[in-house]
Length: 205
Image (cartoon, rainbow, N blue to C red; front, side, top):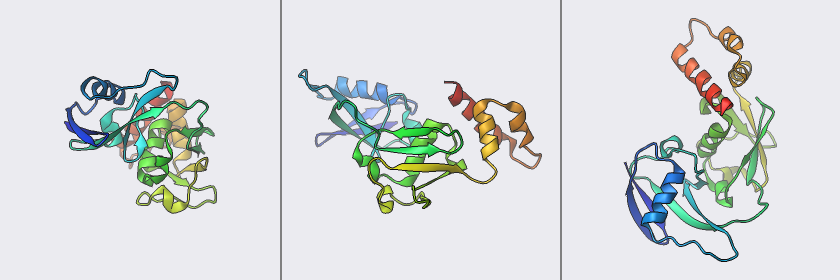
């Protein structure tokens, strides 16, 4: 597929496979676009972003919704030591708090985009959970984070929809009997087992 890398006013096309990783994409940009990182005291690095969110090197382009014709922004960033996460998400299923790293531009992304990032970090399918503010206000996919006055350092909360908690905990812990006990003949086995395998594979990485 063809994607476009936007850097310093120019927009260069690249032919890449859908499963190309962000790390490999960065190397292509360095090799084919005039991107020079300083050798001075300030440590610099290349950042690719899409939809206002910084892309992690291990992510595949197709996994974050990048399709043929998409424009990816390329920036040169200065490494800042001891920089904390832009926001955090408390996962009520596991009791863990997930850091959401990146720039303040993340605060202008859509709720749907944030849920995709959280899904990739937690291993939970997007359709199984909802996010809410510290005050308990639910975040809706069609809105932007800025619509909820979310600031840097805010900790959001992740809760699953009714009936999913025990099932997802069983998936994440690899408890096959617990998972099977929540299945019925009326459920769509293909979809459920896809969720199960997805959670198990991510948990074991």
